[in-house]
Length: 193
Image (cartoon, rainbow, N blue to C red; front, side):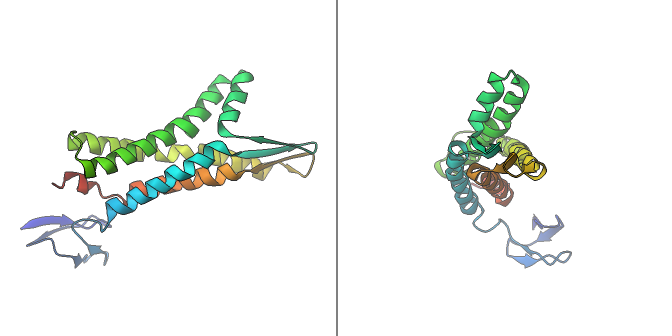
């Protein structure tokens, strides 16, 4: 006899083998492992890495002040805050926009590739790294909220206008893809031999 739980409603079942069946509580198909979980999560993470490049290179915000358009990248905004003496805001933007996404991407790539190339690390540490990456994942959206809030509030045509740039879309997609990749990944794969 083996114990298996529904990934959807967490109902526990005692079965004779790991064959697929339908959950009696939520009608969800219960499998031993989520099908192609590692491959899908790795593909989404690679796409997120590719989106991270334009998110850092292109302008995240376009400010029009008295007819003059000024474009600002994420790192340009951090430097601007530092030059104006707003060190706390610069640190928050740098950590939320550069450090946390980089930690997420490197952490996810490390976990996914470590399962294929057999890295000598205890499975508990891999799970802890994954849980940490999953926990910090949502904090990267701070930039997108700020740009969206400013763009929706400040609209005075050519006098003063703020709108999101190409990097805002890339950054939002990158954060969403990493959250989906982490959610789609079946951590039980880490314990498989």
